[in-house]
Length: 193
Picture 1 (cartoon, rainbow, N blue to C red):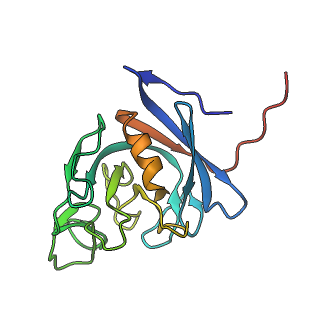
Picture 2 (cartoon, one colour):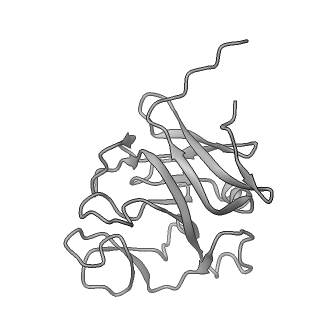
Picture 3 (cartoon, rainbow, N blue to C red):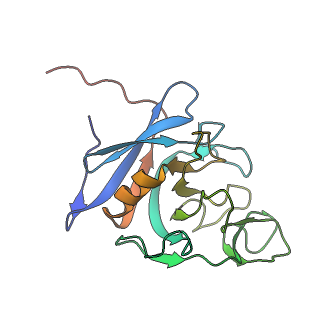
């Protein structure tokens, strides 16, 4: 059964991530008639997300905006979400002691940060989830994204990931401000009525 979906102008405004299995590293991203396999953090889900713990934060997270690699996607991917072309010097601060913790930065950057222009293709199309952005708490986790999955299906460092084909299908149907509800436990089966 798919999650209850609200739509605005035919666009999806609500998605849910349903965990599959006890390790909570795999799930289903559901909404708008879609049920897509996804990968989650190597440490499963956490209600107490910390920097570097490898866990995907549990909660309701808005999809704020995104980036795409213009050398990979020659034409801007179709979406109603704000989406900008990545530049090779784009990064994301991940040092809790830095003033730009969990914020976009320009590389080279003196504090610890993550490069958004990556050789592995995980961020060729990436959406920013509203985790620890406003208000921001030092050490509560940074760079929590919906991004592309690894070819081997391996877990993320705390994000939600889907295949490139599924991401293209999904972003074409997302409304600005759409929310992803990441659930703590697998949903029980509904009884027959």
